[in-house]
Image 1 (cartoon, helix red, strand yellow):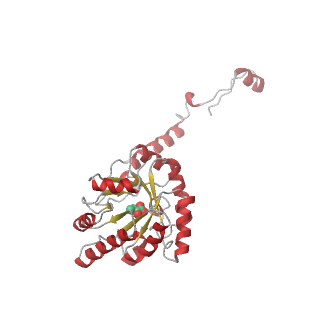
Image 2 (tube, protein in one colour):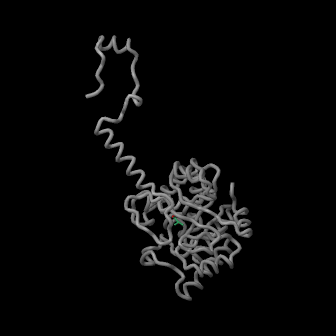
Image 3 (tube, helix red, strand yellow):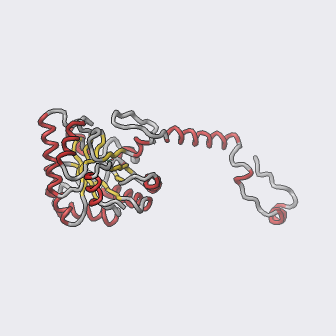
Length: 284
Ligand code: KIV
C-alpha cells in the first residue's frame, strides 16, 4: 500500500499521484480495483451524496460513518478523510479528539484540512500525535460563505504570494502534501516546484504532482450534473443507471419480469397436498 514516504519519492521521480473521492463501500471497492493510488473521503459528500448545497452542514459523525464504509471497500488503499467544517478550529484538545474519531472510528490513514497559515498550529499538533495531514488551499469550500462563491484563486499577485506562503507554512508544519483547488496553472506549478511534498491539484493545471477529482464528476453520476471546465467526464454512469432502471420499470409493468428463470418452483407433491391436483396459476 502507498504511504507518505513513498508519495514523496513518487514526486522526486516525477511519477504522478492519482486520487479520487469515495463515500461508500462499492465506490471505494471499484476505485481500488481500478488502481487508484489514494482515496479521499471528501466532505463533498455533502453535495454529491447527501444533497446539501455546500459542505458546511456535513458533521463529524457523517465523515466517520462514510469513512468506515470506504475502508471496508478498499482495504489496500491509502485513505484520507476530510475533517469537516469547524472541527479543527477550537482548542487543540477538541481538535485532537475529533481527529481521533476519524482515525479510530473512521479507520482513515490520514486527515485533510482546509486552510493555510491560520491552521498550522493545529496541523503541527496533529502531525506530532502521529497522524498524517494533507493540507488544502486555494478554493476551500468550507469557507464558501466568506469567499463569496466558487472562484478561481491566485489570479492576482497578492493572492498568488499568499497561496505560496500558505503552502510553505503547511509543509513546515509537517503536512505530507497539499491539495490545490481551483488555482491558476502557473501559480500551482510554482508552488509544486518550491515544495518538497506533493501537490494534488483539482482545477489547478498540469504542473501539480497529482490530481484529484470527485467520483460523481468523473462518472457523471448525478441527474442534474453541471459541466465544470476543470473536470473531464470519463464515463456516463448516470445515463446508464437511468436506462437500466427505466427498463426494469417497463418490464415489471409489461409482465416481462420476472420470467420463468427468475422464479422458484415448489415440488409437485407439495403443491398437490396444498392445493389439490390443480396447477397453480401464478400469473394474474
Ligand atoms: O471534499 C472533497 O471532495 C475535496 C476535493 C474536492 C479535493 O476536498
